[in-house]
Length: 259
Image (cartoon, rainbow, N blue to C red; front, side, top):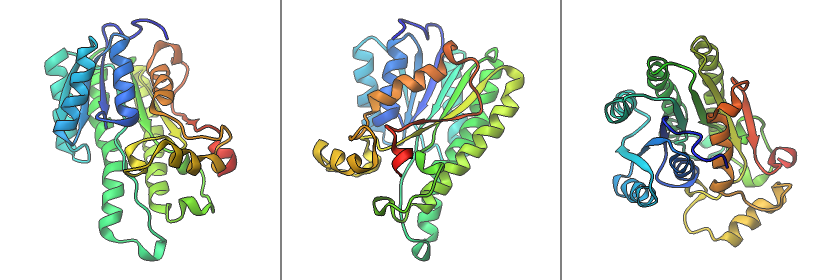
């Protein structure tokens, strides 16, 4: 890990109270970034932020519902008020829900698309102009999914059509944002994780149950960890990735080859 490669930079990370968002916020802070951590649950978010602060990180906790346009403006305003600039955003917040197509409800549809698509569209709407005003040349990373890239008949992912569609929609928003942001030398990419041990997989799962679920559909034979995803997000955020934009990057332990 390159030491302090984000010194002097400001980042926003959504879904930052746990999982991939928390792991990425912690690594960005450890490498010198000032990080605005965003999540809906205030107590959990503040506890996560306090832990990073105790390790020397400079972070600001902002509780917000990123599916709302106004909330995304408030997040960016808070970042600019606290730190004056914005250079990096990891739009990581997401949710999962499944149902066969003949059992889809409006409530489920709205829940999945509000969090997985609106949060990306409204996040980009506000972070990109802030990055431009900060001098451009920044990086935005969207947390998509391997399920955005392919359908699967594996029964473990039955009823995943809405989730897959929402993540595919987010990827297409990303590509157009990359085109539009290129004039300011800002890069926009997505990551497509496979099965990663996060709260989205459900409460109460043990390491053994995670691995039992992941082993048959992963070339590495196990579940991934948030700490294995964060370094790749940080790579895309860094100056080491200045020739990469408009792309979806699979970080999935080979899930895509067995799906």
